[in-house]
Structure formats: structure tokens, C-alpha cells
Length: 561
Image 1 (tube, rainbow, N blue to C red):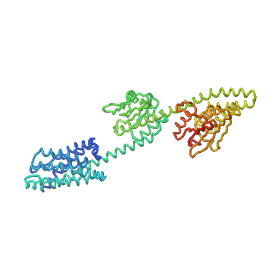
Image 2 (image 1 turned 60 degrees about the vertical axis):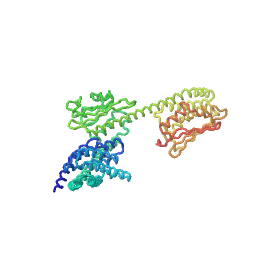
Image 3 (image 1 turned 180 degrees about the vertical axis):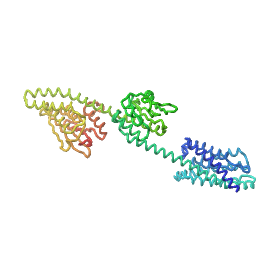
């Protein structure tokens, strides 16, 4: 009956012990304990935490016959099981020294047994790690079984060391069953607390990651198309739906671009920014949080607005410059969730990246347009004077041919100056080149022969404008025009798997590679193709001196219609 009462008393003390453990599990101290402790800072934290529990187990113990019936073994075994032999030994030493300082018949034996218990947990830890069974470390049954063995070993050590032996034997008979039961159950329940904390943490992390990925997927590429009212409204609706928040707003530096949720009747897109919190976030570039309690929040647009808290996060563009904000709101009757706050900051980074990418794309387009204008500037003066001189000469001897040349010249400049888009069909590009070649043939007469090979099934394929003409012009200007004999220009189109292959070949063979070339002809065409389609496309050159130069262009067929 005495042993049963002692079991109940120790279980009562263990409950207090476990309540403290549960409360501590709500702090950040327990986060490193939810995984196998490897890093030195985590090992140190493991030592500190379980040393405290080891000492508490002694404090909460019951004084019996100049000894203490306790739950100290829980701290020692758990320290070794989660931290390894070194941590377990140090926890056992700390708890043992504390027990030794209290004195009594079993002071020395309890100190030794506490060290042994910690080492026993550490040995099992190392054994499971070597076998690759780390999952067993966090098994309540494992913790309970080790503690059971550790308590039996402790009773043996008390019998071996404590004197007089008769008193030691009598003590063991009284406390063995209560301590074995209490410590075994306590260790298993302690591990259960850790497992519950771990499961909750993983569930929280999984839910957070899933929601973040869903938002990222739903908003992917929207703001890359432009940071404007339409796109901002699409993003705001997605974020509000996924976060289940009161309202979402997006602004630029001057006005409200989008608003959805509570207060849509008076928060109107296009209206100037009136919130001091938004203006502060834009000016400082820092997150502004008004929770409605410590930091009061009140809508400046409507006295009866139901919104009671806001989180304002800056959106950044090029050079980390603030280009706007995203604002999350909650109504007055609802607290701002910490997960929504964290997600909001992450979403702001995502949207900032999209805005920056959009700015880059627009700059790239402007650069392409500038390059085309440079091509215009190259072609027009260089070619115009030669064409006019040729036309003057032809008018004197053949008016019909002169009339045709005027038509070719008209076609050339119309396609050169007034193309509505920067992407044209291969047939259109060939017409442009053909008009140029006809004029050049009139200029060089019998000294220039041209052959075109364009299969009908390839005529509809789309490619960037001004892809062929600069190459053909270079072939004449730097190739055939330098020959004393007849120059030959061959233009061929073919299909190679998923690529369109265009070849411009001359019979001069005068190509000289120049790594430092920054001209507006072949180099610019190559850069445009590689920037648009990747390094798998572009220009390659094959040249045999004084025989031929072959320029090959590879473009994807994905633009076919």
C-alpha cells in the first residue's frame, strides 16, 4: 500500500514536471530539440534544457529514508537520447553533482547512476544513428524502454555503492517500483510532447509553404506585363482569396492601383494616396504595421470604415527603389494573423521581383527598337546615294528598267521604314532582300549574280525583321564588290528538325573575324537572335579564303502560323 501511495505521489510530481515541459515547448527553446542534435549550439542548448529538467526532477522528489525518490532520470536519459553521449554525460554529471550536493546516504550512488543514465541514452543515440534509424530516437516507446533499463541500473548502483547495505536494500525495495514506473511513463510522455510539437511545427510549415506556393503560382508573371491598374487588381484578388484576409490594396508611389475586400465602396482605384502609413512606407522603404492596439489605425477616407489594422510593405523595382506598396488589412473584430504578416512580406518580395523583371523586359524591348532604328540609320544613307546614282545612270539608257528600279526602291524603303511590327514572315523578309538585290544588280550589272531558294512551305515562318538584309548587304559591300570578276550571292532556306536554317553565301571568301567588332550589321543581327531565342540560335560563319563565305542563321520554328 505504501508503494502504491508513493507511485501516486511521484506521478503527481511528474505531472508538474511535464506541465513545465509542455509550457517550455511553446517557446523557441524546444525548436532545436525536435530534430537530431548535430550542431554545437544545438548541443549546448540541449545540455542546458535537460540539465534544468534533471535538477527539477530532484527538486520535485520525495524525501524517503535519507534519500530522494525522484524523476531525475527523465532529464538525463532524454539529454543523451537527443544529444548524444557527450551531451548525455554532461547532463548526467550536472544533475549528479546537484544531487551529491544535497547529501544523504545515496548521494554518491545517485551521482554515479545519473551519469550512467545520461551515457546510456547517448549510447542508444549513437547506435541508432549508425544504423540509420533516427526515427526511433523520437519514439516514445524507445524513450520509455531506455529509462526503464536506466532505473533498473540505478537501483543496482545504489545496492553496490550505498552503505550500510541493509538500509540501501530497504530503500530500494520501497522506491524501486515507484521510480521505475514514474520515470518510464514520464520519459515516454516527455517524448510525446516533443513529437506533438514537431508535428504541429511541420503542419504549420507545410501549410505555410503550400499557401505561399499557391499564391506564387497564381500571381506568376502578372506584374511582369506591367505595373498598372488592371494587373494590380488581378494580383490583389488572388492574394485576398488565398490569405482569407479582410482587404488587399496595391499602390504605386502616388495613387491607389487596386483594392479588393472590405471598404471597396470608398477605397477607389485611381484615387491619390491618403494614408500616412502608406506614405511613411514609401518614404522610408520599411515595413509599416499598425495593429490597431499598440499602434492605432483609422481609415482616413470614411468614418465608419470597418478596417482596424494594416500592414504596409514596400514594393521595389530597379536599384531597390520603392515603386509602390502592397497593403493587407483586417477588420476591427479580427486580429492580424502572424502567418499572414510573414506571408505578406514574402509576397511583397515576389511581386517586387516581377516588377523588376517587367522593367527589364520593357528595357530590353526598347533596346531592340533602338537597335532596329540603328539598322535604319545604317541602311538609309549608305544605300540611298548608291541607289540614286544607279537610277540616274539607268534613266539615260533604259526608261523601262528605270521604272522597275523605282518600284524596287519604293518596295525597299516601304518595308525598311514602315513595318508595323518587329516580327515578319520569311516571304516578307525575302521581298525586302530581293528589292535590295535588284537595285544592286542594276548597279553592278553583269558583275553580280543572285540565286534565291525559298521552299513554299517555309514562306509563312515568322522571324525578326531586318534579319537578312544586313547580312546580304555585308556580303556585297565587303565581299563581291571587291572582286574583279563576277560576284555571286546565293540565298537558301531549309528546315532542320525544329529549326529554320537560312544561308547567305558569296564567292568572295574575304571574311575576316574581328572579336572587337561592334558594327550594326552581322554582329547586331546575331545579338538580336541570341537575346530573343537563346544561344542555340544565332549566326555561324564558314569561310574559305578567296573561295566562299557562308553565313548560316538558325531560328526556331515555334513562330510558325
